[in-house]
Image (cartoon, rainbow, N blue to C red; front, top):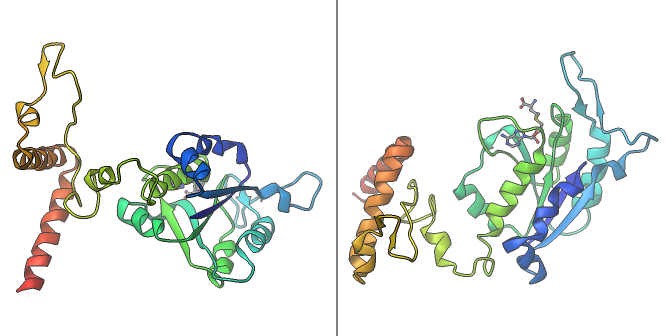
Length: 246
Ligand code: SAM
């Protein structure tokens, strides 16, 4: 997968050299390219922002550098990339959305700052490429860089060959299939006894069926405790499946 990231802070992405993503890049699974938005400015101060029309606090990112940057990075012959704009006003970024993005061959991320990017940039990009405005949560960050890191890491670990054991993504919280709408329950490793605490005996039993049932039960329990609304979504989906199979 190719990923281009346009930002005024390319150094923010140093963590993409590390760990799973660093290894995936070295293995040629991921081709990540960073671009400094300021290289598409034309004034001597490399200005990327200006005051908002209509008044109000803060600054807005100017359309011209963004337009030129997207033309240069995402233009050209061949199929266009999917443009991702992290924004608190976007649709929620979920594991399901991450799975769909992981099937794309090429993603471009546009990292906003200040009060965001002039709205004409999205409208203009939409004429040439699919665009997704995504929010990583109901809170406001200082910029799109950390949101981009979250999305890139989530998508990358779903690419074939990135995780040492592909099974682990299947068993994760929110994973499509058995874990959809569920949180993963507690996990344990050696030693079996630690500070007066025992690992649940079923995990030492060697009975795989019993282990699966215990994990399912614990996943339901944790979801009920921490995210009860997910269980309502699970119930609604099951009902829908039942009604469609009638
Ligand atoms: N004025 C904007 C609003 O109220 O929707 C907030 C702008 S925020 C200070 C600056 C940038 O941070 C945004 O353009 C976006 O790129 C990023 N950002 C902030 N919160 C985010 C979130 N929850 N999800 C994704 N990106 C976010």
